Amino acid sequence: MSARPESNSESAGIALVSIQGLTFGYNERPILSNVSLEFPRGKVIAIMGSSGCGKTTLLRLIGGVVSPQQGRVVFAGKTVDATDRKSLYAMRRRMGMLFQFGALFTDLSVFENVAFPLREHTQLSETMIRDIVLMKLDAVGLRGAASLRIAEISGGMARRVALARTIALDPEIIMFDEPFTGLDPIALGITANLIRRLNDATGATSLVVSHDVSECFDICDYAYILSGGHVVGRGTPQELREVDDPFVHQFIHGEPDGPVRFHYPAPPYAQDLDLAA
Amino acid sequence: MKIAAIPARVGRFTLEGLTTLGHATHFLVDLVRGIPGGLRRPYLTVVQMEAVGNRSLSIIAASGAAVGLVLALQGYITLSRYGSAEALGLLVALALARELGPVLTALLFAGRAGTSLTAEIGLMKAGEQLVAMEMMAVDPRTRVLVPRFVAGIISMPLLGAVFSMVGIGAAYFVGVILIGIDSGSFWSSMQSGVDVVKDIGNGVVKTVVFGVTTTFIALYVGNESEPTPEGVARATTRTVVISSLSVLFLDFILTALMFSKT
Image 1 (cartoon, chains in turn cyan, red):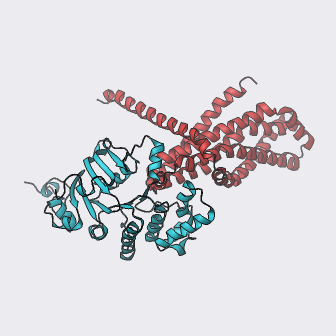
Image 2: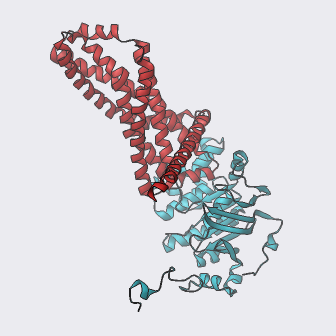
Image 3: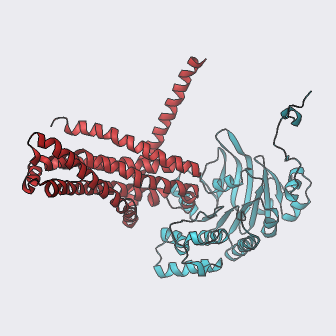
């Protein structure tokens, strides 16, 4: 799909994150191939695609957890370099990542989880930490759950606690890895609303990795669609709904068959059942 | 065809072995380099000492008592044949300080604390807690691994001392109180025959070496475990097997080095 040029011209020059000619794979298995993307400041951007297309890997590349085989990731004008630990950690202090299942520390309470980055990176007094933690928990509607243990909260609440922890240090970019997976409709609505609301309130840039089309389209300003290691679609939700690229059409409308086949490649059915003449 | 495949298999096996050894060495160097940073917050190490040390106390003390009781009984039967029953205290003390204390403590430590460390690190990895920490610009090495490593190294000699002391106490109970050996002989034979540096000192050195070995193996295996329930289960088993074999092998080497001239 080519609704936009390869480099999003609207955001050129003000992109917080820029991915340039990036190629990455695990061992012999290619995941992303010569991908170029730009994420402007202050926007909610969705990165969508079917399972295993490299969405989460993209977030890990931005965070410097893994290094690209070719190309580079630029964050706020500086190349993300996993080998330079000091500057990588300095960059990560300006990033926040919400993991798929929260990745909360199970030996700490809700309060201590949110306080964790503050205790690690600031010299704030205990009173200040308490105030900030309660403020962040209030923003996600869980101030009353501060004293609970992680084992005592639901999956949806865990996701919100993780979000409070993610925004504890007011990051410039918040990366959400499958934030809607496994949530009931109420929790899903709350989470989607929180992503949009927090982005608008803090002025941060939000990257939402998901395969939930309707939720993403409801909250995002711009979206990229990945398939087979390439960007196959990009544009606003409205623009993407109107494109006629077969994969993008199948993905957005959730059609069971199309370029992505329902059946896994297999020999003819009759041959498997020994019915061939 | 099978014979032709042997060199390739040997080559692959060797390569995998060397790769693992390289990874493990790199991990150990990383841990050691992280110790100064990890020790800046001693409370993290103290918390881990409670987990790996204090919580292992009951099994260590119970095992020490059992070994001391049996050692005293068996020792008395053999020594009394030669009219040397008074040397029971010396026999028990040397056996515990030189060999049984360090080795059995290390084996129990690997089973109790080592598996716990491996499972904890493996589950933290499976739950993405370690990556989450990385993404928060917090080094899991200094925040998670080093405090556990240091706690294991400090706890092992202390647990070894508890094992030996409880064992000697149990031997005293059997030898002096139940059998009726002279209390003065029991203690004086021990006092005159046990060399503080050669016997107790070398025993302490062994416990430190075993502490480094078992804790390192537990952390490395946990860190390298597959982030699945099966992967963590396999990792805990591997920790016990590798640690136990390493302790027994190292004990032989250390004993040969320490006591070969005595």
